[in-house]
Length: 112
Length: 116
Image 1 (cartoon, chains in turn orange, green):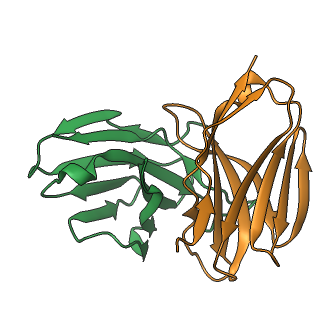
Image 2: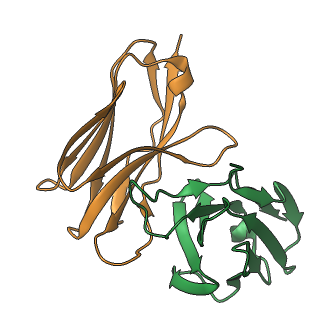
């Protein structure tokens, strides 16, 4: 079982839809949770960062962490064609400088 | 500030050859991490260097190696290339190495390596 599981999609939605992207993980030691966005031919860029459980909102983006279920989500409201990209979840432990563990990414297409 | 710069952007090599990829981190960043990205495995951690010392290493064979120079620039080397080494190699830098809100990983746009 991989440490982080993420449905690769592709996911296609109409403009204006609410998008839900999810990851599950198996390592209960994970404390830091991130979402990265990767456009075609570009490197990943950090979108959202949360520590432990709870919600965090930034504009149209909301990140949720449920540690009891080992489940994290990213919601995109009022999705735009410019949101079309691959979304990667990432996480690491709360001990020392441990490397990030990434999900495989979900490819999202928002259709105008 | 200039972002993370990786050179070259594209590379085609033949099986059995070796290759060196270069990464210039954001000015002031002391940590450089390398990741391999493939459609099948996603992003996999190769190694991390901090102040010229390898601090973390992923589960890759010894054919994959790296180093960091005193100016924080980093190189990674792959010897005896195999077809399965074809991938996007991403370099990321951060001020301290631990990915956090105040010290996130900043990725370059990668080097696309094709092994034929």
